[in-house]
Image 1 (tube, one colour):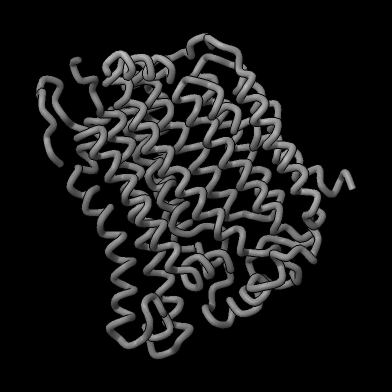
Image 2 (image 1 turned 180 degrees about the vertical axis):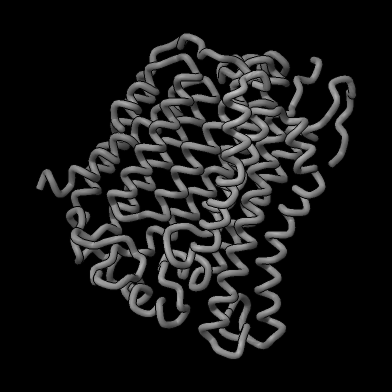
Length: 141
Length: 172
Length: 117
C-alpha cells in the first residue's frame, strides 16, 4: 500500500481530522450522542488507518507497545480510582455527589473523568488488538 | 436486512461473508437511528461495521479463504431453529404493540431518569448520565471486560513485533 | 395487528437465521459472523421495545416533550461493547486453532481430536 500515492496523501491529511473528531465525540458526549466508547473506537480507527497504509512496523514506532499497555491499564485505574476516591472522601463507591462542593458539579466532574478513563482504555485496547492481529506471523509448524 | 442474512447463510466465500456481515451491522445502525437510539447507532456503526470487520479480515488473512462444502444435510439444526422461532413468535404475541406508551419497560425507572437527570447531573444526554452516573458500576464492569479481552488477545497471539525466526514465546 | 407485531417477527427471523448459522455451519469464522448477527438482531429487538411513537432521542433539549426510554439504550451500549470483546477473543482463538490443527472446519477438528486419543 505504500506505493499508492493517493492513499498515502489522503490518509495523512485525514488522520488529524479523525483524531479531532474522536476528541470532539469524547468531550461532547454530555451534550449530544457520543461518550467514551465511541470516541475510543474512532481514535483507534485513525491509528488503524495509518497501520493499514504504512505498515504495522511504522505504526508501532508511533505508538510503541509500552505506551499502549500503559493506556490500557490507566483507563481502568482512572475509573476505579474515581470510585475509591469517593470512598476516601466520605461517600459511597462511585457516588459522585461528594467530589466537589456542589453535588451537581461533583456529578459533572465524575462523569467527565469516568468517560475519559473509558475512552482511554477502549482506544488502547482496540489499537493493541489490531496490531497484535496484523503483526502476527505464522509460527513454523 | 433479511436479504443480507439469507445471503450470508448461502455464500461460501468467506471474504464476501465478512463484508455482508459488515453491511448487516451498518443496516442495524440505520435501524437504531430510526428507532431514536442515536448513541447506540453510533456505537454499533463504529464497532460492528468497523472493528469487527477489520479483525475478521485480519483473521481471514491469517487463515483460509473459502468454506468447505457441507458433508451432511442439515435437517436437525433446521428443525431446532424452526421450533425456537415458533416459540419466540408465540412469545411476542404477548408483548405490547410496537411503539406504545404503556409497555412495561416505560413504567419503572425510565421516566424518573428522564425527569431527573438534567437537574441532578447537568448533563443533557440522558444516556451518558445513566451510563456513567446512575449505572456507573455496570460501566466499570464493562471496561474491565474490554481490558480482559485486550489482555487475552495479547496472551493468545503474542507480541506483535516478534521477529520471524525466534521460536519461543516471548513474554509480554 | 400485523403492523403492530411485524417488527418483532422480522427480528425473530433474523435471530433464527443467525442461530442457524451458528449451529449448522462448520466453518469457525462463519460461526462467529453468525453470532454477531444474532447479537445485533437481539439489540434491535431491545431498542424497539424502548421506542415510543412520536418520541425523539433521549437528549433533553428545548421544544421536545416525549422522549424514548433511555434504559434499553444503556443496556445495549454495554452489550455491544461486550460483543465486540467476545468477537475479538473468538477470532484470536480461531487463528490459534488454525495454527494448531491446520484447518478451521469444525468436523475436521473433531476428527483430528478423535484420532489423537
